Length: 459
Image (cartoon, rainbow, N blue to C red; front, side, top):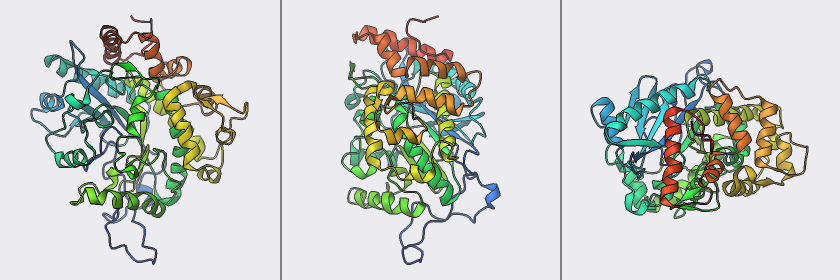
């Protein structure tokens, strides 16, 4: 999570993502308390609702930086105003939407309506990146990719979005103090996947739980924090998993619990979460689905699951390449081509959490020695393997549907490692302000030009 998802519409989740009714109470009656997924309008016929992999909602978050210094530039309101003439929290710009986030220096680009395919989205996002760059040039600013600003001081530089929906952000700030890296300094990619009913939810949630701990191995993009190399490739996820420690139920262990129906999810996740936050949130501002900050969150009111553990990459081609590979693996799991749904659902949180901690630290070089976990992906060649090797194997097995833009990007990631590893190669241990600025300036150019960051390969 880069920020709490507010009550405004989420990427790719308009009214066409139809909800289904909330679970009944244990005695079969309607629950007295408002459920996190209340029954809304009468149900549309099932043939008019989105099912598994029918469509995709994609969100990309970027930080604004001063063009000359690359210091944080909290001016997303001015960016939006330059596009539409007024300060708004969300605007539709042709085929995508732009919106604010909790921090005033973070802008989100997202699919306005669910996209029937991930193919072609990289080009669409790239066009908007260039459009935004044109606006920012007049402000002497730029977009800076990667999942964390490498030298931001959030205690001094954090500014909350002060406009629409600010009451939600203010409530988070009162409870959690959003001046830390875990709230103020993290940019991610969110992938929204639809489901229809408990059976589809259970299959999709089981598959997502297995993939979550592997994603940093191809998506880690935050090796530098506070101007230093920390020894972790994914510092964003490290601060993400601890940013709500005052109320641990908010994030849990990032890997969601073994909940495979809406009733189970409500009992195991939502109700303990709402009970834990209630003493700190007497007005009930935060007691909604958006409070849940696990690495994948169920949005029953919209009939989708949102994956939130993917770091933002150097350009949209890289982001979409990661998503295309992720979706291909999820499809293979959901269709039981790699292992049975029953076996997937049997996996507890703790072994997945252990793998996640390893990939947060070591990315593609993390060693996975859980033979049972590897077998769920059909990997039987060895009793252990590095996470990057497992992704290479999976890419060969599931044949992701890449396009002309993303195919080369995926090759770079699988062959040279995630962006975090390539950044470390370019930094080469020299964390002087001058060197960090040089490396991250090149990263900013990669974003505008839509090309991969390859150390020593500057045009």
